[in-house]
Image (cartoon, rainbow, N blue to C red; front, side, top):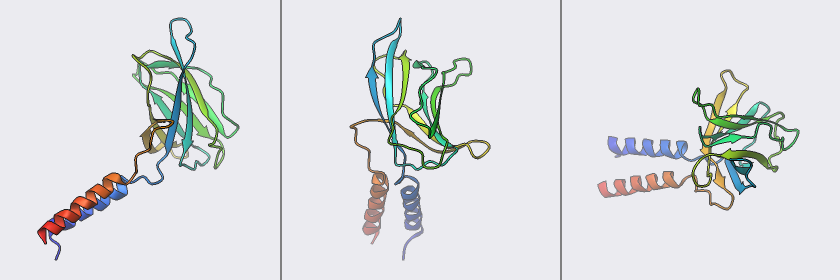
Length: 179
């Protein structure tokens, strides 16, 4: 007969497995290229590719540029007619991060294209990954569906259920020891 503690641990394990196992989590990969500098700025270009997500019209993604790290180009070109692209500069007066925003104009927009943004890097070293969020603007207020971090091309994507499997293994061992 399972004890109350075993039931609690099993429930927690299942909750973690369901909550921490984003089997269909969005992946945004990037390639950073150091361009010829302009004036006093260190000019960089990021190319992004989004995968593992189907967007509907009115859904989109924001890639966040931390306050103080860089100034985004003001008018990036759209990768196609399926997307409306916008950049918003970081604003130290608020303070608010900058963002590269892509809004799907149609259901199932083209995702094999690269999304590109150039920016002047103000940070130290080289720029790296950024935070992103997937949103749905069909609701008011706008609903955040998912958050994550961009990963460089060539980097491995961690298995989504690793933590859940580890927790379930611990639960099985704990139960076995009690028996």
